[in-house]
Length: 258
Image 1 (tube, rainbow, N blue to C red):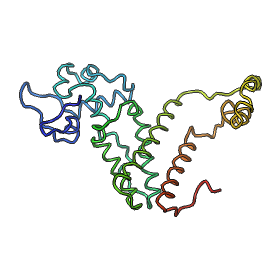
Image 2 (cartoon, rainbow, N blue to C red):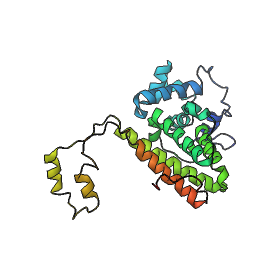
Image 3 (cartoon, rainbow, N blue to C red):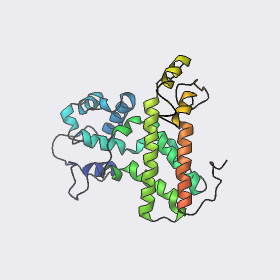
Image 4 (tube, helix red, strand yellow):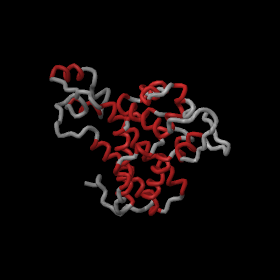
């Protein structure tokens, strides 16, 4: 259970926003929450979230594990502070938004994607009611709502769209991470012949022709392909087209019409 302050605010939220007032009792403090979170993020960036433990962070900072607990209640609180740190925002977060809701939303989605690419361990931290109150989450939500403001949506509708689009971006970021470093699968004629015995048009009438032609997986690797980037862009365009149709603002060319 997340600890709360005297006002009832979740403690990690108060810490992240700088409103938390620690007790002055006990020995003099030699650390800060910012130092702890910065070190934990550095470990996660280099080795993944599994490498982040209270003992490891304390060791890297030159303190005992017990001393760390004077600042951070437990690892769950540390993880919340990590994913809420404004230091995670990429440089593009400070850029002036593009003209028009569609391009602004595209830039917003790319900002999220860049953040996950730079810090893929974020995808492994569970989200919940407390995490959405952290600085980064609220900044991301605010930026998305700003992009949607000209569509005339209500506040609840804006948050629903932000949730849908951010979930899409996170899903693709996870796919990119899973595919990173894996070799392309390329089959020869004999392998395709073997697959052809089980992957038949009778069994899979729509997918089988594509599979057996090498267009699904196993065909010659295309050196010009940029991972799943084209798939990501197409999916994002479909979502933006859906927004335009739903709220009657299809004022830009449809990229799927050609």
